[in-house]
Image (tube, rainbow, N blue to C red; front, side, top):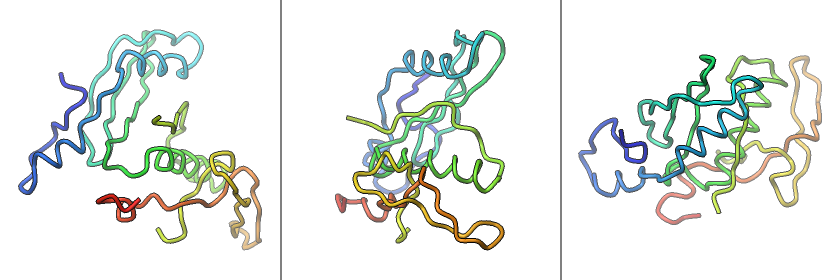
Length: 165
């Protein structure tokens, strides 16, 4: 099984370029070790790694632990946007939507945004250089400030495609 290549479909236009943007080499064994570590006590051994269907911007893997617990690992492709900001914004947004707004979304067990919309993206305040706390209107219509989050650069692929970043 090739974990690194895009294998879901073919491209009718500029196939070689599209495939190269979706080729990502990463350490599968290290990802399995990290998944086992974040899965929790007693689940410290990954016994199987299956590649799920490729997305246009990410690789997804299903990692199965010795006790049957399964976690999903995700690795962004080069065409996903700015590496640090794309991942940091996605994780902070999922946390905000899950824990502040109460919307059921998957729980992020572990992540790392380091690889070496006109209103921007939602981030953890610590991931930005000069952030201001997030101010939003809560369910009761009350203006609320949350010092854990901040609005930062947009990670829209339209803003970074073709070397626009």
